[in-house]
Image 1 (tube, helix red, strand yellow):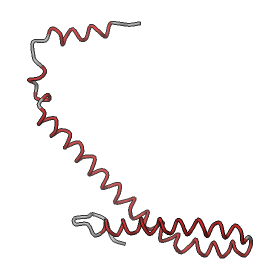
Image 2 (cartoon, one colour; image 1 turned 30 degrees about the horizontal axis):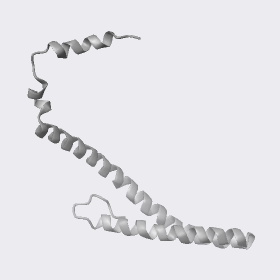
Image 3 (cartoon, one colour; image 1 turned 90 degrees about the vertical axis):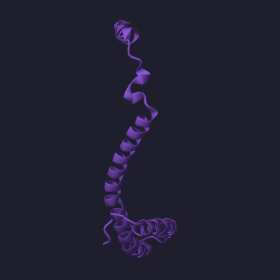
Length: 117
């Protein structure tokens, strides 16, 4: 086992500066740095959501057109499978309504940067 890294802490031991007097030890500065980092992450998240939200909305709209037609085609070949898909689609449709409601709410927010399509 190597204990040589412990010698690096002697630097702190023999240091005459009190770390509590350093600017980075000030709670107000720490809060400022944390707020700045959160703001940077927020800007990145907004950019990501400006892509993901329209993608989700388009996907839901496409499936609203496609799935019922698909169920009818499957019904001709296999009624039981069509029934299972229909049950799945009923549940998915309820979830999609919730998602679309949240998307509409997001579009109505002040200063939103989403593009309406």
